[in-house]
Image 1 (cartoon, one colour):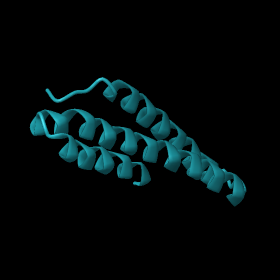
Image 2 (cartoon, rainbow, N blue to C red; image 1 turned 45 degrees about the vertical axis):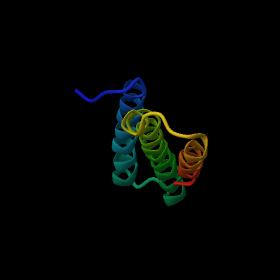
Image 3 (cartoon, rainbow, N blue to C red; image 1 turned 180 degrees about the vertical axis):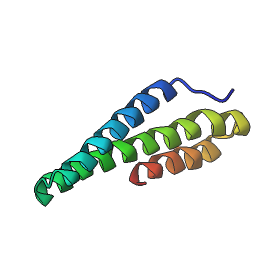
Length: 89
């Protein structure tokens, strides 16, 4: 089984986003103002993006490190820079 320490938090965030998305569908069905719907969609989108970032960074921190193993300092710097740039995903 492939699990990491962050997976429960990711699952919780995605479940909350899923429930929130269902509420947005109801808002549309009820004819709520588009501005309200757009704001709520933005919140769901942000939650999903954060879950994705957490998953990717966790993968880089744990899985890639495990495969790479010990590296020279100059090579470590390249890996650290690669991890840092993932913040902009």
